[in-house]
Image (cartoon, rainbow, N blue to C red):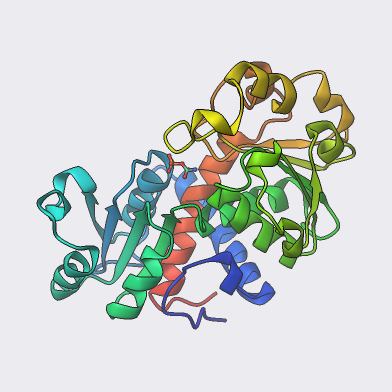
Length: 307
Ligand code: CP
């Protein structure tokens, strides 16, 4: 089976079959990263541009590693070293990159919809590596891969997503993906962090973390986005940690074999206690490992590969 899309822009656009294709392909690539020589010739001669207009550690590095492990050439461009600082528009920049004939452009941008705009204007495949507060589909796919690897399934599981749902592209992509794959999703956060009409996305809404994580198979904690949030969204970080942080006391409400997830970077002691982030239920670093395999799968499938 092939992925017939030109671009990967969001989880909202993916069918169950497409999600399964990506996850199965990613699983087949896991082994490459465990070899002594971590390289296969699959994408030799292909060129991937990572255009990161916002900071990133995990996503940018794993896209670069994914490309290199498939023998593609990879180029990284960041906002501060690009002609965006001279006032060049995103479309002009993308059309100039298009003129150099790469095969895939991976883009992270602070504006929701930026990857969609690019995908319409250039002939290359575009992968959304996070656009504003809209979507982060590769994060949701690596999260689902981690859940499937640990639990053997996604359907029927109870997942709690806790934190700033309103501003989180990770939450939005996971809600689309997990509900489509048959999981039950509960969200919790302060009222100022819960978007209106969120229940229309098929989730249950709670105002206390305890109510969302009770009986959960999966707890996904969201990062407090210091760079985006204004102080008036919640009174203080100390109070946020007290009422919405995951800690050794409230985690007891979840199932004994609960998985604790976080997209990173984590704010230790705010949304998650350090002993929980580093504890036996945490799969945070396995999420990062699976991120390389998911991105290898997407680069392969969007370049015409088949499973
Ligand atoms: N999860 C995630 O997107 O992390 P980075 O911002 O480091 O890429």
